[in-house]
Amino acid sequence: MSLIKVTIDNIEVEVEAGTTILEAARKIGGAVVPPTMCYYSKLEGSGGKCRSCLVKVAQGSAKDPRPMPKLVASCRTAAQDGMVVQNITSPEVMENRRAITEFLLLNHPLDCPVCDQAGECHLQDLSYEHGLADTQTEEERRTFHPIDIGDKIKLHMNRCILCYRCVMVADQLTDQRVHGVLGRGDHCEISTYITKAVDNDFSGNMIDVCPVGALTDRTFRFKSRVWFTKPFDAHRDCPKCSGKVVLWKKGDEILRITGRKDKYGELEEFICNDCRFEHKDEKDWVIEGPRKIERHSVISQNHYEKTSKPFIQGNKEKE
Image (cartoon, rainbow, N blue to C red):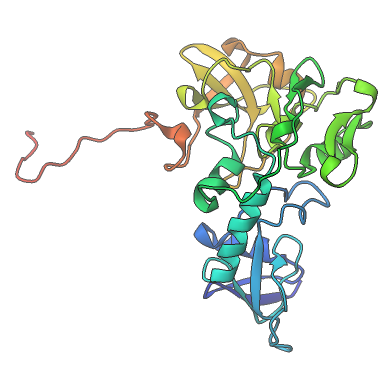
């Protein structure tokens, strides 16, 4: 496949033709990468809904250097040879991202102190970086009562941003989806059909792909803050999935089990419900070691894999 050159925030990168702007930015890494709330590289058809990844195309391509008239969704727009893209270098993009963040928080209950997703919530990260202290909205927020959509999953529709990730997981991993988006416009909501329970071998992955606290693990509910637990990579022989997971421990107790995620918060591999919910005994797992957590993450608080003796100028270590 032919290669093309794209410039994003004054950094040139070479990617395969057909690559989206977002994936090209991810190849560069760092602050150049636009935030995403609905796009998921492992889910076909995802993206284009939250608009948080909008960027400015200052030059369409080498053949047609005209800029695109409006901001475009980087997750759905293919990069072109010679394209020049502005993300954090564009004041227009940053102003738009603040507006999108405010829109995503429009009906959000802002209940981070009691939300199990706090500390690993993508909306929390987005609002911390781009959110405003005040809102311009005067209307009442729409509210829903939390419901159980199975014996292991709790749905808080108040927190949902309608990213459709959970629907796509059910469509693409299972034979029969029993939940989806009901209603239209401002009346949309995630729900099961005729209050039917979600029950399949991979339903727990809906919890992992949810970027907010709309879908949470009932077995972990209110047990601990995520930053009070310590994650360990572990694996087991499983006939249904790869068996590669993260064990979240507090002392010797395993409080919850999740799939392994990359630096963009996406699952490396989907895991089955047996691994996620039914094996919370340490003897069931081969523990590989502490999970590497990004330094700026709140989860890394007081978690040190290695410590080194501090160097004090003027003092020599005795041999």
